[in-house]
Amino acid sequence: MFKKKLPEDVVIDILSHLPANSLVRFKSVHKSWYALIESPHFVTMQLRNNNSIHFLVGNQILIDTDDSDTIRILWSLLTFDDKMQATSNGEDVSFSMKSLDLPFSSPYNGWNDLSNICDGIICFYDRVDRDGIMIMANPGIGEFRFLPVSCFPLPNSGEYDRFPCPRTTYVVGLGFDCRTNDCKVIRILEIVSPYSSPGEVQAEVYSSSTNIWREIEYADYYGIPESDGSLSTYWNGAYYWPALRDQDGSRGILSFDFSDEVFEFTTIPEHLLSFYNLIEFNETLAFISYPYPEQGMEIGFDIWVMGESGANGVWTKLLSTEPLLGVDRVLGFGKSNELFVLLSSGLIASYNIVTNQMKTLLPIDGEHFVNNHSIVLYKGSLVSINREIFHGR
Image (cartoon, rainbow, N blue to C red; front, side):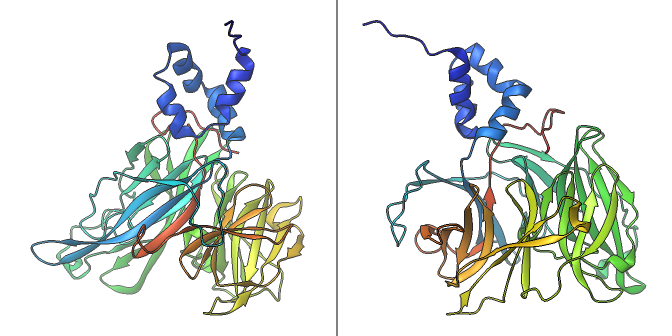
């Protein structure tokens, strides 16, 4: 029987819609496929076309040592099947779990915190690590790289023996400098002094092209941005955190431009609900505000989108959702109208903001997951952290 080959452009288009972890395996099929999948053009194409949904899940584990028990976080990559079919209790969902083999170098708690995700790349770090070390990683293709220690030195003083963790990281943001085609990391941290309290807040930026950290100016009146990375986001060359300005107590957004390497604080509409997540929605910056979640409480979300002038421009209220029961927090948007949330019952659910339909996907607790520490929506890519090729938007 005669078998007709598909045109090459059709094959390439089909491959570009597949998840990154599958494409890594396909590189061994043929030399031509290896060359294709490694090419910068295809990496960018796959980043744009692939809609596979993953979650990074961190679970607390107890490690027995000679001196004491230590709690560490075990990170895993949770992947659903393409159809993501589910019943009301999530029993029919097909999924897979893959543990991430992260190196444990911290003498304290291990890699307990995550940065945002930018084109499939993420940073793992320990907020109270004395050496300020972190890992840049693309979990989808299994690449990990240690970043150098902080540029802020710790003095070799015996007085620091009283401070087992004199360097505390508040927030970490990962982003892309489109002028120099460079992946960068911004970190705001506090250096605790033996002679003064509280410590001094500092900021530094890491460049992948130079593999070094550099100190940058950070004004005290900016205050400290929200440390929960799930509330902040990278968008269009800048990073955005919810923040409370020390100067006048106003609520707003602290942003960092990765090209100009400057901070800026902007206010947000008054009379918001208690909490707000900054998020990318339909290729624009948006934030979702909602009241403090309490057990048995129905929560409605207000979704605001940014005008053309950036965070300094006009914010427009796009819609308000119907009250939803048992929502703990927002995880992010998948497809254009699909909002993923974590329920207080330990279930992941997707909510369609147009049809107002809620669909349960998977339990996070119970027999599959124990002592949940963190969960982050993750979109994989072929972007390599071991080559100076980045595809930031």
